[in-house]
Image 1 (cartoon, rainbow, N blue to C red):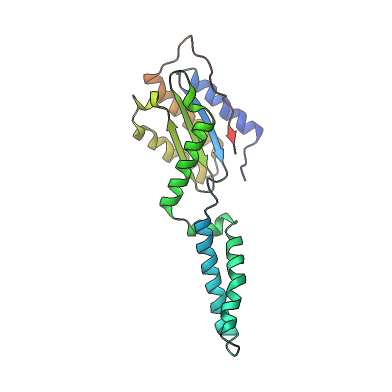
Image 2: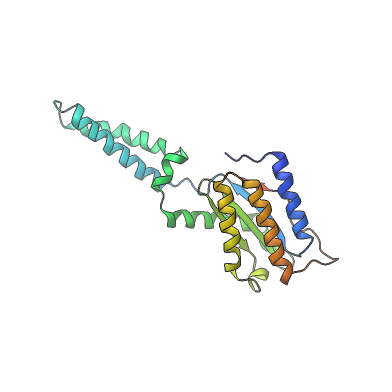
Length: 205
């Protein structure tokens, strides 16, 4: 679940507004519960649970037909797959590379669906936090990437991930927004003709 009160959302939106006064860049903060259902990880958990059920049957039903060991593994599969809906249980079965891929894909999808690619000077930038995976993606449009190295965002990402792990999502967003604004202001300073092309509200999905 995403726990951002209206006060939290207003605080982040204010940080976006203040940051965009310094730059023609358009900053969009976004938070998602998780980026994917990870069916592969859930099936790994299901298989492990089924094997555990078989292990128990071997010791406690030793005098019965060995076929019982196979039969008890069937509910083990269902139970294990269901346990995959519990984040703390599923997390150890995730592959780090798969998590990185899914979070990145989720950010790319959001970048397009939220029209960050459609700003006048191609200066949209997405800051997306995926809570289940404890990952953060910062994606910038081509106008920004032409002047700002993608490596520039890594320190901001690392700091924000630390905030998420400390259950300080709101402050993490505010700091990340301010720092992105400062970076953008160097190459994309604000001007008198600086329309607010994208909403400053936090996108929550």
